[in-house]
Structure formats: C-alpha cells, structure tokens
Length: 382
Ligand code: GLA
Image (cartoon, rainbow, N blue to C red):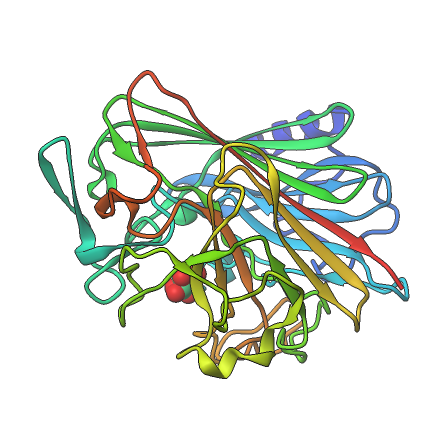
C-alpha cells in the first residue's frame, strides 16, 4: 500500500504522466481518450514473475494513441481515426494483462531472442551445437518456450518533442538455450505524423544469433468482422524465401515474378491466397537488402481509407495472414478473431539464418552493437 501511495505521489509530480493509480488501464483500448494530452502516461496493469506490469499510453498532437505494456514489450492497441473520423484500434489486442498471460499467438509482442523459426531447434556456432526447445513441431519458434514476449521488461519514459518509451531486458547466458548474456533495449516513439518507430539495440558477451521483431496483427478496418483479404499490399521485394512443410526456409532465394508472392505492385491479399497452401506465412527478401531505413511495404484499405507504410533497416519481412487464427480468441471489442482477420508484417532477418550461411548473418559478437529500426506509418485518405 505504502508503495502504491508513493507511486501515486511520484506520478502526479511527473509532468507527462497524467493518469495511473488504478489496477487497470481505465479506458478501453478501442477508443481514444479525447481529453488526453500529448505525452505518455503510465498505469498499473498487474504483476507477473514478481514484477510490476504497466500499460503506457503514448499520445501524439493529433490525440492518436498507442498503448504498450512492459509485459513482452507488447503493443496492445493503436487508435486513430478512419476516413469518416471514427476511431478504433488497427491492431489486435486485449484490455487486460490476463489476456496476454493466456499466451495468445504473439499479439503485438516484441519477439526474441530469435524471431521466426530455427530448424530442428538447433544451430552450430563457433564449433559448438546449441539445442533449443522444439516449441513448433520439431522447430524452435519466436525465441522458445519463454521468449522475450513473455518477460517483464524494465521501463522508462520521456516526453521531449515526442513521447517515448524505453524498455530494457537482459537475457541470461543459456536462457532458452542461447549463448551469451544479451542486453536488449527497445525504444518506442509515436510522432505527430503517426509514425510508430521501434528502435532495437543489443550487446552480448558471447557470439549469439539475434533477430528481434514486433508481432503486431493489423486489420486496417479496426473491426475483425472484416477479413484482411480486401486489403491491398505492396512489398518492395523481387524475391522471397520458399519454405518446406514445417515452414523452414529451404535456403533458396526465389523470384516472386509469376508466383502468388508477387506483391511488387499493390494487390488485394485475397486474390491469390488460395494458391498458397495454408495462406501466406513467408519471408520476403527486401530489395533494399537492409542496413538503411527504406520502405518495405504499403498496406491500404479502401473501407477505412487507412494506409500503413512499413520502413525498416532489416533485410526481410515476414508476411503472415493470420492463418492459425481460428475464432477461439476475442479482440478488444469482444469479437471473435477468425482466420485471415488480421495480418503481420514482421521486419526481420531471414528465418533459420543460424543454419543458412548463404543468408545475411544474424550473429552478434561481443564488442558489436546490434541496431535496427522499423517504422510503421499510419495515414488516412478519403
Ligand atoms: C509467425 C509465424 C507463424 C505463426 C505466428 C504465430 O508469424 O511465422 O507461422 O507461428 O507467428 O502464430
């Protein structure tokens, strides 16, 4: 109790933190608080692993809001107007921590230490073979049994010209089978132009694979009664990485031309999805090749008039059409989340890179700093 009071005193004396002594987030995540001022607020959101969990709300000058929890570095909602001015969230999520503790399929999560799959749940690095948990058939997926999406991160906030949240997590040597103590920082900022910027940094004391990404599921209509099959997508990728039946990359880099993977011009997602067994769940080889911040993809929806552009320094983009969503989970507004009612655009290194020397290296060595940036830019037309 004493601690709670101290917390309340602290937050009421901190200029940009304007709400936050309740046990939940207050406002639901499907609507924005129209009285909210530009800045960042912090609300108690429960406890996990003996640590306090918070929900942060970043509000920009337009009053648009992104909510992020330090549980899993999870983006729980992103509320902005559609072309008629109606506000709802363009990402799937829950209003309470309990939803996330039930382990939904990475809704909005920060995924690591290695986002995407590692074949046969093992890799060899500097002559040593490391075994990981096989949590996806025989493969390792998204960092293992308790990846970064299920950790409570340390949080700090700033509200200079734009609101920002910085999350830090130290993954111990041997955690989930990976080598090296890895110190990770993710900074989230929301600009007045509705750019959600995710900046990842990390250092290690032993060579390790690393592949950090965000696993937000987007539906630009903000309503999962609509599928994403009419959304139009354009990806700046002339090539993709084909996969085997367990979704492990074969090692081949194949041209998209003449295949259902050709999104070089804006194409409705549903046009050719039936030709792809199970739906899209593939890594696209970005023409930028990574290294500098360049446009990777553009997603548009004529119903809401919304457009989402993705920029990244990463060489790859996993395009996933929510194939495993089956209606058993419900969104913020209580509606069932069915197959193809949301999609992910996960910026990343290529799947199974630790076992594919021909792919861009995902190995971070002591003395080096991992640094990647991804920007999701939202806009609305008529
Ligand atoms: C990633 C994978 C998918 C699926 C989802 C989570 O996007 O590529 O196959 O596992 O995560 O359900």
